[in-house]
Length: 222
Image 1 (cartoon, rainbow, N blue to C red):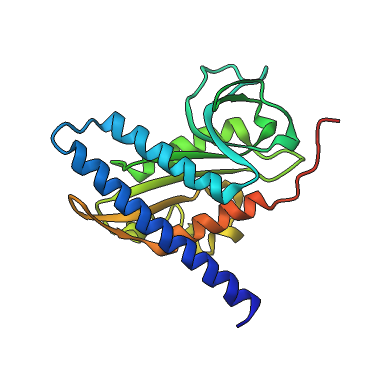
Image 2 (image 1 turned 135 degrees about the horizontal axis):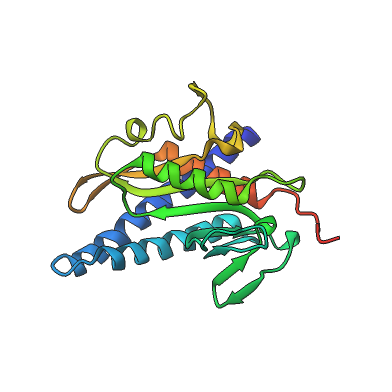
């Protein structure tokens, strides 16, 4: 077995384990709350669950809820589901528990986490807006990505062209321009508690986050 195929096997195993555990956890959660479900509570549960998995793929880096803050930002602070903080780029402006206020230069990526969405286009527009506050610097490429846990339609069709193409051309996500704002739809919802994993998106997401975690980190404070 070649090193490449060994890597693909490890990636596939991680994706299959993730899909199985997420399906089981969400099913238990929704069965418990079926008659009293609150979309905000469900959203908080899903965001925290996804942040936990993302942290395991990002180690030793991490993902945190918070906001971007700097003297050049004149607009109202935006609440962001996930900021991938790169400590070698600088310390937090302010931290309380797992909530961080970060200067844009210390952020490697922005991640929006959604249980489901009415419009993939609206999420893409949100990522484009956040991208304007992040943008690449001389230190590193930056990413802005969306993660949708469930979608009622076919994930590949629903997410096209926002995460499957760049300028109309199909490319693997990890070779794509960073300002493509990929959106990963991880499961197709087929019934109340019936979720079908979409492995191309799950595997590309794990790969991309692992690739971010292994980007050379150089101290940029001086």
